[in-house]
Image (cartoon, rainbow, N blue to C red; front, side):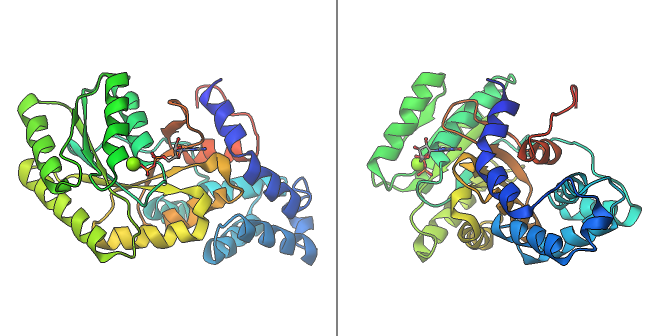
Length: 318
Ligand SMILES: Nc1nc2c(ncn2[C@@H]2O[C@H](COP(=O)(O)OP(=O)(O)O)[C@@H](O)[C@H]2O)c(=O)[nH]1
Ligand SMILES: [Mg+2]
């Protein structure tokens, strides 16, 4: 099954919910805006999908001003625009462009990527999938088992490492995650490996000590691998919706994020959560996940996402 098929299937819960709430999307845009109930249905559908108030208002304005034929086309433009980073969104609005497809820039800026997020969001499996993704593009990869808090976490990463042929730097259980990260970053530099992904613990974000620990891991990585600052990518479980957004803000305050990965879009009707993530964090979404399989994680592409959401064919070669 191709990625686009999996993506379309993965987004089916969000699509179903949106279609049920939004009313007839084949309605002519101008006609729709003469009827209050149509606009209200649309507004309700967007809020229910966790798009957020501010974005919903902007989307309705954009739809109203659109010269597209019907609500669905206008809505697709407006949603795609919301998923563009801030600066581009502002530019598109000023110049009146319609957004075009562009995959997220997913290459880390340096050699080390710290993966953070609360327990169970999919950090460890995402690291395995990222390893596979970059190796298939000719990069050499290493993992660091920086979640020393849970006994099973190191073992889980070790199993993945073995399966993928990726070296895994482990520390003693209950040991200092910063020490593991330091050893791994030093080893990476010595071996000249292209990319090191550092797994981290995910105890609840309300615990001050987790954030302190992450800051420390970040500092030792930068010390062991000076020159390029490490990337910090947050893994968010889409099922948690707005609560995930609150988590993201906490992590962003502790260790400024350079990317977000949204997993489990297949398990939620609230796929609209991607919009407030982009708007309110100002951090690009790098990858999205729609399942547990190795190929269920792919770079995020705003136009591809919106087309899949509405089950619209994606033109070849785009
Ligand atoms: N349905 C679904 N499950 C996922 C996805 N990503 C990860 N998972 C599952 O989520 C569970 C927790 O993953 P894990 O990597 O251990 O989370 P961690 O605690 O953050 O390291 C595992 O059962 C994964 O297979 C996804 O995109 N969709
Ligand atoms: Mg884990």
